[in-house]
Image 1 (tube, rainbow, N blue to C red):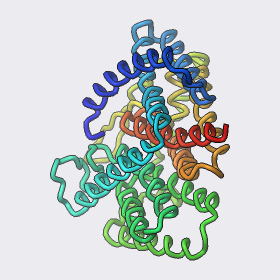
Image 2: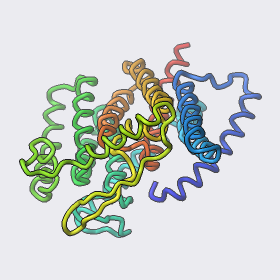
Image 3: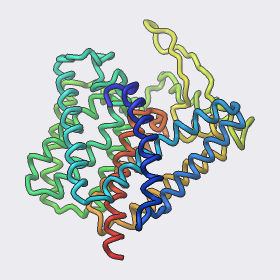
Image 4: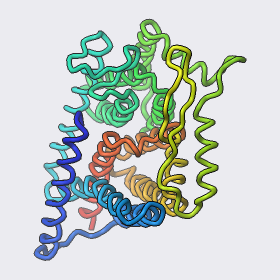
Length: 371
């Protein structure tokens, strides 16, 4: 995930090879892959986005979006297909996520202490991991945090795994991404409720998390100043540019309600005296962004996809040990989506689909065993 160009090439090549092998295997296999509600929702999502983009931007752009969105589905489908072939593959995927989390967290910690070996940190006050964008790094950390939290709660080596979850939270705080922080807080509350975590475990987790917050407040006060400006804005505080972007997005959508306009306009605004102009190309709200670019048609397909995923996860809460972590991840992203466009960031979207496929594949495996 460090190079989106390389990732894109691999995804394109892998998706084509997988599609061909999948089709050939379906003809030969006695037990062909059965489509679930999530698969149908993915196909509706692909169809609505492709149609809306074709209507508002032409056949060329419509085909481009069709192939691009098919990548999303193949990331999910490959994961489900891979795990359904052998239950032992689940451990391989889990270890891959764990290793990725450890690498990302430690590189973020190196950046905090100004050891940025690959020169990926643009803003010295905001961690960005292997990405030059703190928002991208924070989006991936959402998934890693709840995965590590789930590993802590489910395994015996509790304090060691809880330490890694706390370090992940430390990196999240030091990205200064307020939308991510609010989303993670909501997801954490949901996870505690769903898992019915015991008092002793709550105390130990609070100790680690509050220690993380204390160190952040001590060495990086700008994070909490940014949060304070949202909760208690100053009387002379400059209006948040997001409100302006949301108004622009809504007015554009009203002109193209059904299929959208294809793109969000480039907006320039005065950011500060020493850096007067900043250009923004999206609505800073995933729901408004989808409405603007793909209209009501694409929006309904997008919402239906997440509804199908949530429904599948809810049904497997009692049997799937990863379901609670995925529900917390989705809640965090749905809240973050009010302020950011996480689905437009390929590095975040691919990892999220990878994790969704991993969790739902475990649910499908459990349901097939019952049958």
